Image 1 (tube, rainbow, N blue to C red):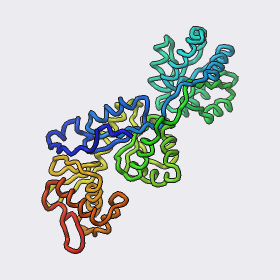
Image 2: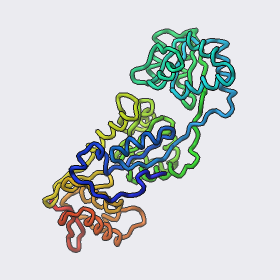
Image 3: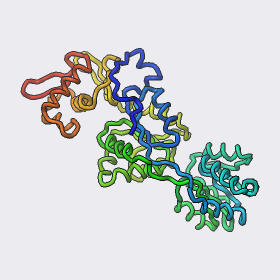
Image 4: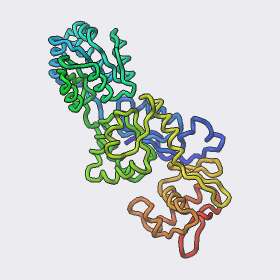
Length: 381
């Protein structure tokens, strides 16, 4: 795992600076599971003030042994497909580049030019057009279900459909097309593999389970599966966090599908763009902030920081945990033993006292955290 912020920042952000778009995600931590475009997504989030945790769930590996891809290409030349579904831009480009190396680029391009080309999304469409080809249709929601329904409505009995795979086989869609009478040629251009270093992903699982990130982003369904697999027997805690306090943001409906099967609420932009994904996070995270008036001060809890009278004040995990526990029931006294449960594992009651002291210093607002002698602490109404 890489913390792009270079560690925990403690700089107070003034109310005027916090009102700028560049600070719209200040105080929040966002996990990024993407690999290929992780720097682009991280940069967009950081430009809005977020702290970014990089933990690639997968990496794309071109097929080392091109035998399967070459065999699929030969099949497309021997029996030119009537319909070609292009799932991804990188897949389409990789297919043509591999064909170029075998001296088959022109025959393949000619076969594709005669087919009914379906581009599942804008990147696939761009790759088709950059190859000098013309796509005939794209699903509005960029989902496989729309593609299957569209092709079945057109009638595919007796036709050959070439399906450029999206990192792994999609048997449910291949079977649906075959059940409608089509002959399907699966075209495997690349495959997913585990990250070279799995430690960042396992660390992200721990952060999500401990609710130490405010949002996690996914740009592929395979990354969702990889994260759940990394959780192993401890997946119940991960799923509970994703269903409650951790915002789950997906680039599109295909990516969101495996999460919805686990009853995890998901937000996604109307169009599958990284910039749109970031805008969705900017819109959604502030809605989850807890705001209250305490001892004459306005207080808003924002990720790993508190906004006190308009100024954002970053806090370490332990003081922030104490503040969240107290803010959940303002006016109620919580004992040291009760607050101990909110702290990271391994803490003792002395750690509660230290966390309260650091919280008071970090907030810089006297009277917000009140001591009730022999009972504990509270946020006064």
